[in-house]
Amino acid sequence: MSQQLFDAMNYLEKEKGIDKDLLLEALEAALISAYKKNFNSATNVRVSINEEEGSMKVFAQKTVVAEVEDIQQEISVEEAKQLNVNYDVDDVVEVEVTPADFGRIAAQAAKQVVTQRVREAERGIIYGEYADREEDIMTGIIQRKDNRFVYINLGKLEARLPEGEQMPTETYNVHDRLKVFVTKVENNNKGPHVYVSRTHPNLLKRLFEMEVPEIYDGTVEVISVAREAGDRSKISVYAEDQEIDPVGSCVGQRGQRVQTIVDELKGEKIDIVQWSEDPVAYVTNALSPSKVMKVLVDEEEQATTVIVPDYQLSLAIGKRGQNARLAAKLTGWKIDIKSETEAREEGMLNDSDEDLEEEELLEETDIPEED
Image 1: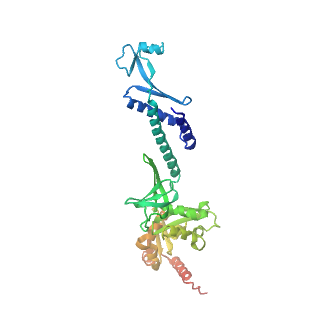
Image 2: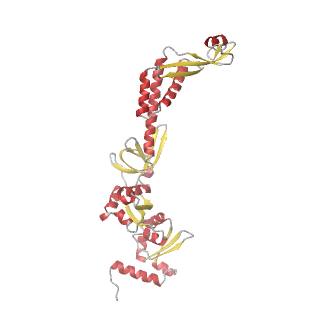
Image 3: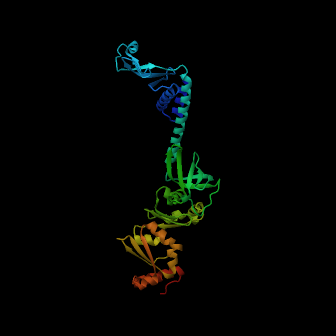
């Protein structure tokens, strides 16, 4: 066997990280298979590869018998003792059966093994690289699309954006640059497959991490995300340091930070609210931009009844119930919204609630209170 093959194996081990011992094992198995196929041999054989000599030999394993009936599987006692006087019946003897032209077959087998192993190693490296990016955000360029997927070039492979993960408000054009959230990385016989999403709630979270340094460094924490992709989202944030305004940090100066994310999501509206461990405050914040008069909490049922001024009812519920639905998803609390009139009829409001309503109205209209 040519020394060039061993040099190639050493190179692959160094440059590609492919274990040479594994290559040799695979090559031995391939040579055994090639020998049996090319020389119609059903006998057990072993291949010996000597790197120092750059040589290869094939040995047939035969059983020592008193009378030979199958020349491929058996060897007589007399012949065995010529090899080693200690052999006896039922011993297994190895006899060299290397064919004269086996070098050609070995070269073909070596080429196939090396090619296959290099391909597998490269796939493994690519899989490991992208598996580490699962649940992360990546930027790619749209290459093509069909009825099932939009295919996005992420550098070393094409990611698949399934139809169900595509935003209904977006048009995907070839050569467009796109940020996507990696949902799953698989490895199969055809190599690694990466699946991505434009609708996943964590895409929004990762975008905020990219745009808001306070989130990236942990000063501000994203607690929850509720999203109806392409239309509206809500995100709740919290800062342990009371000197930091988590909502303001996410909005940015003149709204620049959040506007960058809105642009990336093609105009998706985003409500940023402050998280609170107090369900009254949290639900109130989550129903932004509507005003809330009172929140009644049922801890056992994890439910709230929210009372809003009559003129705020439609805003609190939102178009097709979207605002209330997103607020409930964001907070994890059931939310039942009632108008002020309905609440009064059911005896849910008292005099103090009326005073609160008057104060809120004065604030909204900028009318100073009389002395």
